[in-house]
Structures are given as C-alpha cells and as structure tokens.
Length: 99
Image 1: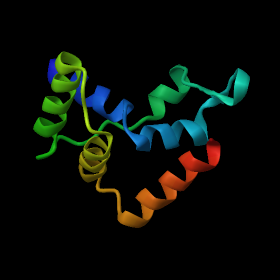
Image 2: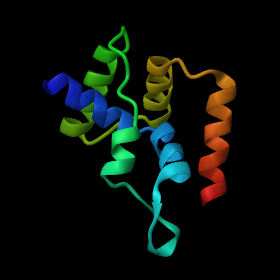
Image 3: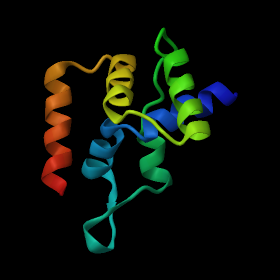
Image 4: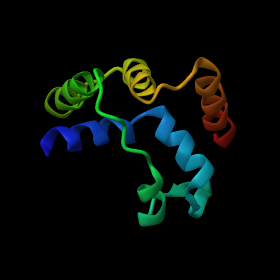
C-alpha cells in the first residue's frame, strides 16, 4: 500500500530512527552506522492511528516539494509511537553523543 510506504519513509527520516541506528546499527567506516536487513527489520512500524494521514501528507509533500520541517516530523512520529517527553530527550542525547 502506498500510504504504508509513505508512513515508513517518514519514520525512517525521523530523529528517532537516527537514534535507533546509533544504538543498533552496525559500525561502518568513518564512525557511521550501517542499516542492513537485520537492523531495518527491527525498526517498528507505527500503529495505524490518527497520525497516519499526517505522516502520509508530510512524506508526500517532502517528496513533491522537496521541503519538510524536521521538528514537525519528529513530533508527529513521536506522537504516532506514543513516545514520552523523557524518552524523546534520551533519544536526542543519543544522537548528539554520536556526533
């Protein structure tokens, strides 16, 4: 389904997936992390809820207009997964530590 692909694209471009990769991705050259099938298979698929249409539209807009708002995307993905404020802060710290 096209909507599922758009939602997954939004999730994959979120800060939360970047934190996940920092924690679970295989090490690659230059301090980067590699997403392989093992890692990609562990990334959760968000439940279908009221945020799905928003994520679909955000992905569609980013694809067609080549613009998006990272903070808005992160907020919507976090809402979709029900991430608490403390979890979000911890994941952001993970991303910053990796840089």
